[in-house]
Length: 455
Image (cartoon, rainbow, N blue to C red; front, top):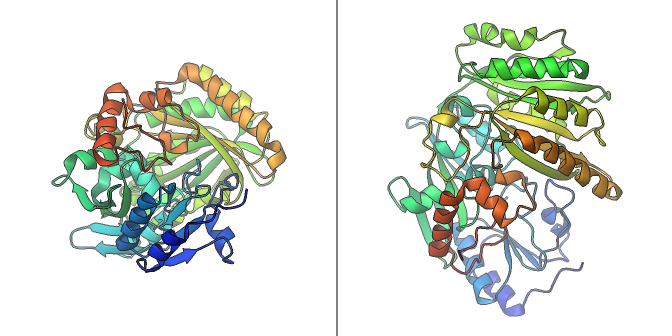
């Protein structure tokens, strides 16, 4: 598909009102800028505007409305569904706006919406501070925060959105508003879990916590021990201290070995860390033990080895009340015939502070789940798309009898309205619809996990 030409009047208006770069299809950087982490996304915007700040976003929204242009919003560009890139419209690209300012005395940080967690952790770590963030440095802060946000610190400090103090946002009618616990509180509620439905967030303010060195890294067990290992992990994680963040995975190692893997970070008193994680090391003979004391940003870089940029991605997710023997059987059986060495399964373990936040305090659903299950399809050959997507859907289907309901919207590209209602719950979904009608009644921002303003 060739990119649609942008109307001349729109180009002129943008050229006279934005400070950032305006990129057309004949620009040598165009193809690089329209590519995101998921290699399946091959869309061609008519125009890309690399916004330098909120004023540029305001100009883009105004010009897009006046010219009836489809709009997509790119933050870090890591989102699997690919909503960041549109065909034939205007891509508002925030990826050049990556500033992070830390207030060490107040233990807060203000970050621009194009920042990644790598940018964020780099700045906050200089002060021995952090907040819950994604488990890969390339993940954008914007998409993760607005969807709720999982990370290795969440059992101690809550989801990413639980640490959000305020946002600045450009609305569909061209206003710059602030939302917090004291200002536009209805919007602040919806932005913590409701995604990019309500406007373009240009900056985020977070609460920080004292986090410096952690006892972290990976443990690997052979796949033939998977059933016993995962059952032991489910039991162990039910009573583990909040200071231990951990996820489990069924993955393929670089040498082709299929294995059970644990990524962990203990950020309590380090002298107690070895005792806390001892049960994780006692599930049987390990293939490899790569756990040691390391700076927090280092543990945040480990998962990148299992999720390289540019591969084709298709993910599906659900929540689990527990990992029953039958659920573990399904996971192991499917991993034994995984069609790509990059395709894997991940179990994010909740509890702790995640469950202590009231269920109605944010738009996030299913805080009482024990785990989130994610089927992660990744491969490199477009000819294998049908096989790979079919495998992920079948695996997800096999796990549904064990689901506690709902799913995490950030990972799903093709959720129906009915599924979205399930993801939030009917009452919350109606509340989000009311917010959408208030802040975006024409559904101007519709490239997202879209909440229709019409009941």
